[in-house]
Every structure is written in structure tokens, then in C-alpha cells.
Length: 138
Image 1 (cartoon, rainbow, N blue to C red):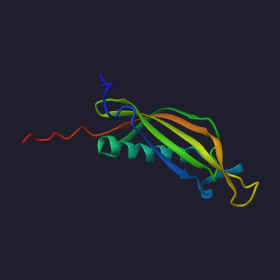
Image 2 (spheres, helix red, strand yellow):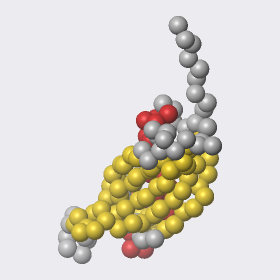
Image 3 (spheres, rainbow, N blue to C red):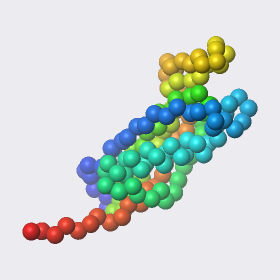
């Protein structure tokens, strides 16, 4: 049974990333969902290094929700939080929020910070880490 007092539980890491126009694949400068899932992998790796001293391996997603578009010119705030700690597995919750957006209607390089970040993608994923290395007592 997982230990609810485990220091890893509730730990989170946040990255911010500008979405370059080279990643737009669809009309309206839309970016495919795989781009955000790649960012989830990056933030999960960072979180596992912090909590477990190992990059871990992404095993699965149990839920992914695409709730708003991600466009080239956006700045995304991507967060991973440890929601369950098993012996070798970690369940993480992920969010990707648009915090600023390009405004090509106002000018070629115009952009604005959104008054309220917009949830674009949420997910639940499982990461597997190697068993802890036994340390010798002196």
C-alpha cells in the first residue's frame, strides 16, 4: 500500500515553453496534440530526476483531454505533479495552460499575456523508475 506521507506525493515541476511557428501543422496555426504530449514527457523527466534521481520511463497515459487549441506563438505553462507513489511506479497529473498568445491581427510580432491562463491539455500518466539501489551500512 502506498505511503500517503511519502515526500514525493504532491511534488510538482513547471516548465514554460514558447511554441514556434515551425510546429504549426493546420489552418489557423494550430499545433498537433503530440507537441504538448512531448512537453509532458520533458516535465515528467525533470520531476523524476528531482524525486527519484533517475529519468524514469514513461509507461502509459490513462487519460488525455484536449480542451482548447494550442497555436504557434503561444507560451505554454506545463506542469507535472506526483499524484500516486508506488514501489516503482509514479502516477503523474499533467496540465498545459496557454499563458500568452500571439496576436498576428495586431502586428507581425504582437502578442499578449492572457488575463486568465487557458487550460489546453490535461492528462494522467504513469512513469516507472528503477528499484532503489541498496546502500551498504558502514
